[in-house]
Length: 166
Image 1: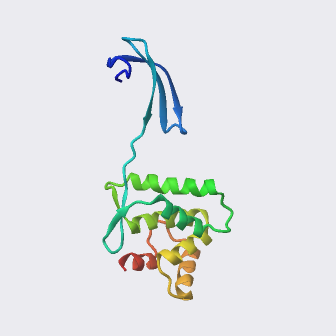
Image 2 (image 1 turned 135 degrees about the vertical axis):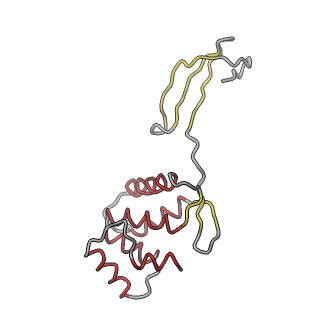
Image 3 (image 1 turned 180 degrees about the vertical axis):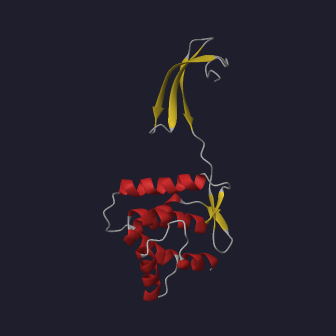
């Protein structure tokens, strides 16, 4: 690091501490030329994500939209705000691991549905009803029947397949 006092490029790290739950590091440094001490911070540079909507348009990924959708599905269910935030973080992390920074909306929706199915079937059905654009009670019954048959989470639901093609 370049010393902010004398401009020398050589220093030594005196102290190093993780901050922000290990997502950043605070380093205390000392210039080897003039002895001036200064602090630097290192953070992981996150990949910027984009969402490709069903109509083909691309927009910047919005954590708030994802959070609101999951909160609505889990409304009046036994889940704390921190559990919801952890779920959102898991989904974002999975999306960050995709090959492309442009994620189709159906991939995000499928990830949410798979997570919700594992933790709360009521929330899963609520989310699916909006995401898959249920038209009537028959659509609800079909998904409930598929849940009762305990299908594999990796197998797409017939209504899911219909929704992603619309």
